[in-house]
Image (cartoon, rainbow, N blue to C red; front, side, top):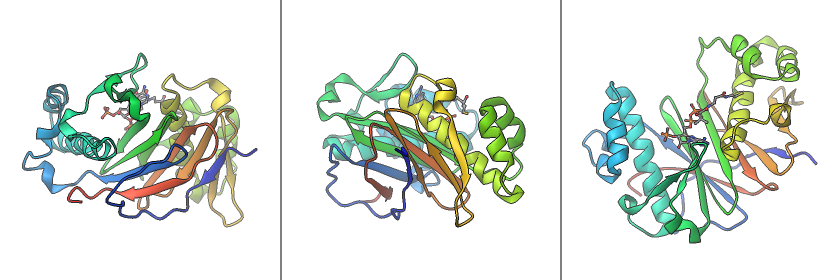
Length: 248
Ligand SMILES: CC(C)(COP(=O)(O)OP(=O)(O)OC[C@H]1O[C@@H](n2cnc3c(N)ncnc32)[C@H](O)[C@@H]1OP(=O)(O)O)[C@@H](O)C(=O)NCCC(=O)NCCS
């Protein structure tokens, strides 16, 4: 069975009451250029450890996206948990994967966060491990060398077999897929087991497929110059794609 599919769901505003079923995935696109971060209101939601981490960024252009992403994470998760954003507590697993602290385990809520340039992506499920990755497609990025270093031989040859003008986008699709596997498992890549197929679909679009037992990969369409992928434990699940508006 092909354990991969592309989400064609449009990015919509979320419902006022969030009700995430056990067999669904919510993904949230978060713009990191929110004004609220500037006046400090987002920083008030963070824990002291998060505030310390934010303070360690030398430049405001790096600190601000961190604050917005983590405030967004808290504001969104608190809606599912019906609690105050500042009251959420997190736990870091042995391999560095963050999850909700044990006192919130009853909800079964799992999440994973990714950020790149001016966007963040948050994936949320119940009782399924999840990994997400979003990448800004940088025009001057030397993707050929990076592919040589991190992709399998088969992936590199499939990438090179594509028309030249599609290779950059294909690289980022492949990269976000492998990163999402890595982040879902929280344990790192498992060599060729996490190999993906890079193919040209009939509509001349690049398609990424994966047959990694026990996991399903779904390509997302974040728009603009971004690529994004979500990987969930188990079989294919319906994906709700939400745009995050802090005022809602
Ligand atoms: C976290 C990691 C797994 C991904 O980092 P990244 O792509 O630079 O960053 P992203 O924005 O996608 O993800 C960062 C977020 O993931 C979460 N995260 C951190 N460690 C994680 C882990 N081990 N597993 C899952 N999620 C993790 C955190 O929420 C983090 O956000 P924060 O730093 O603001 O707290 C990174 O540590 C890493 O090791 N990357 C490996 C790169 C690589 O070799 N890739 C090969 C691809 S072919």
